[in-house]
Figure 1 (tube, rainbow, N blue to C red):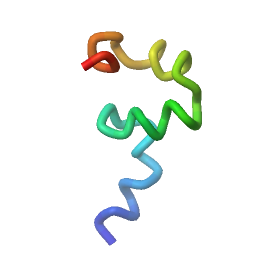
Figure 2: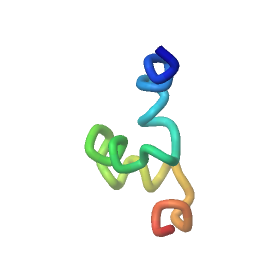
Figure 3: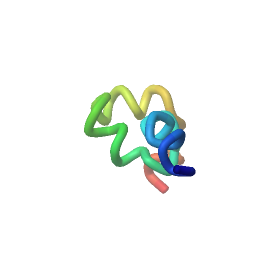
Amino acid sequence: MGQEPRAPRAPADPSSLSGAKDLNGSSSVEARQPKPFVAG
């Protein structure tokens, strides 16, 4: 149950950048999140 509310937040969270990259595209995510964060 605790993960349910986190599901919609996954694409916005830096931890789930991998998932957001597939949905919004790497270019879209890179523009929203700092480059050092994605590279790290």
